[in-house]
Length: 144
Image (cartoon, rainbow, N blue to C red; front, side):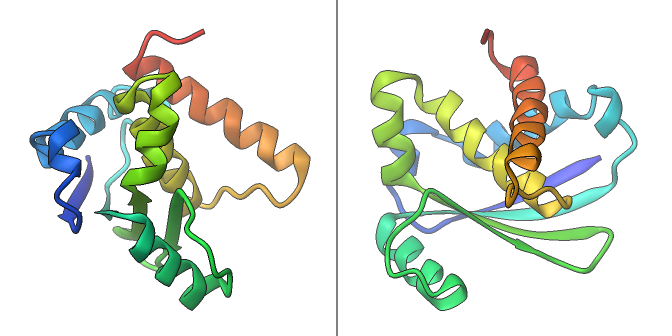
């Protein structure tokens, strides 16, 4: 089973997702029914934070002095695969023309794929990663 530890660093998240731990537990239960993820035994953490913290992390680890939507920090451990940080403001802004839960799921799934070894340095890899992310999202949301 895939498990996520949620660290709530910015209280506004609770305005949108009352119980983030429960929300992710339900999503991961659905994910465990997807054939590729069925037998995965993994754990990761998600930091639900804001633009200020994301800017600090982005500068510290990537030398980019601006906030970003999602950051992933891969671990070399097979069971504990790493950490994901997500910006509330970025998800909220994108959700104005969409849905908050869909945008949040896009972010943590993107971060998760980075943790399991996907990247998008080349356009071909980007297309492959997006395709797989969208397949997972279809299990959670009715999207085209």
